[in-house]
Image 1 (spheres, rainbow, N blue to C red):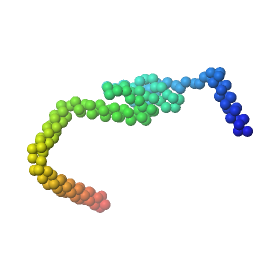
Image 2 (cartoon, rainbow, N blue to C red; image 1 turned 90 degrees about the vertical axis):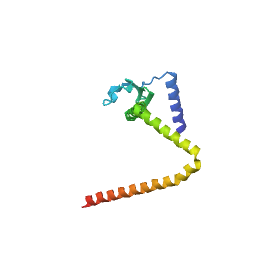
Image 3 (cartoon, rainbow, N blue to C red; image 1 turned 180 degrees about the vertical axis):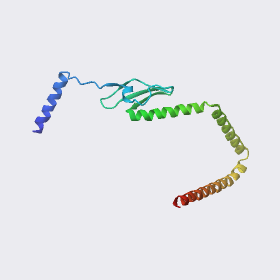
Image 4 (cartoon, rainbow, N blue to C red; image 1 turned 135 degrees about the horizontal axis):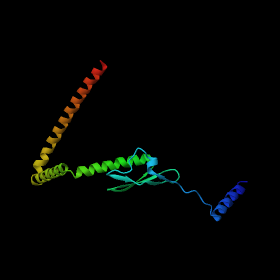
Length: 159
């Protein structure tokens, strides 16, 4: 009996292929209709108006100065837009003169430290344990103070 069913399904499939059975094309939606609370275009991104689907999931195309991004569905679109905003913020910070000045200053300090180490490696290495000790003492004091403050606030809430 199973052989007859298998042959029938195969013949039906072959018949549809031979007759050029047509299938419904998945719809292309308007982006504004699918994500009404999201602006389609801002100064940092632009979402294509036409959103192709596979019959279930919409594929959004987002153009930015950082390249093109794809998002499968409205949830992923929200995540991609958040990431794009973060990239734009980082780009703005990197081009900020204060950031550039601070990066140059840090690089200069690092270079000076390396130069000092190259000139006097023994003396530099002798100071490392002392520095680590000071670090742990300060960290311990900060933790103790934090716990004391936390304990005081907990006692006030319990009172």
